[in-house]
Length: 336
Image 1: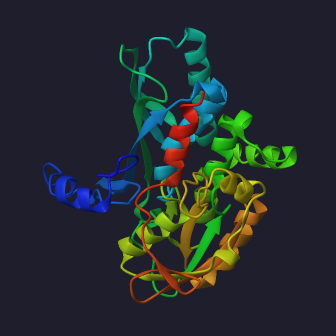
Image 2: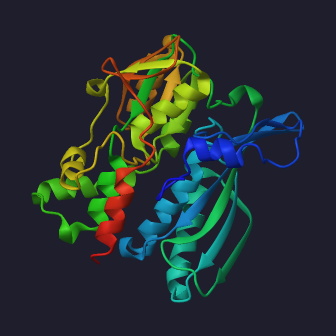
Image 3: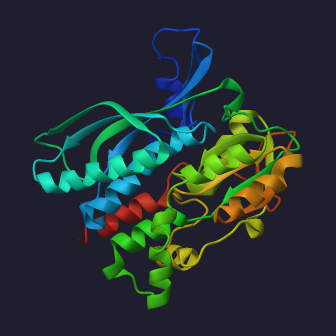
């Protein structure tokens, strides 16, 4: 198991995957390492289900912290191609959170849920001794829809085009610069550009726009271990080869400078808000046009082929396993 971040594939395959409780015929997609969601079938419809931790960083301000927490828990079902529909949320809060601070958190959750058409169906809210920021609970999100609209994470096929929105390092730049601005020694306009990335840190609209625009065969949000990690996980899930180029991906203002300052690789650092997707070749232009029309930067960065693995600019890459931004966050948090 890695010291920080998600368990690696070897630990998952040895300790978690063999022990998944009872087998049920209605589970059509169960847990796999690097896969964002599971699927059950109920009454002729499908339900995509995902669970994530809840994190709140007061230093961001409770509205921004809650916005980010909400979109993190929505993103894993949004990449199913189905619109998120239901939310169950558990808040295990530190004793010091004030009533008005939590009210801001919940008002933000309510606002964002209404905008997406998501209903809160159950939950748990309490203060507990021993709980501390940023990890304050967990949430389960559901997306209910028709089987034909489901985008499976293992659906990439030879011939598909590989598309990416927003590019590398979006979260690493937007989050770290916003949180640790007083320590960042960069020109003021670069700092402001990096901070502007904060509200790019949601792939939910990206996924919904893309799924409605054409034949999307697989999607994955590029969180821990960034674009490189997500590419490897997508190719591995489908048993195919990806050939991609860094030069073809969009890069948003402030990202490369911020990642260089923090000495992290933007391609291997978490980039919540960035979506990777494979699309049938005849629909790639339509999907790109829809994303552009929605104001979402996007580009085609490669092709799916027969074989295995991920090749970036003709060189094979492996999964990074450890996200470099975790250590940076821990180091700078100790300075606060």
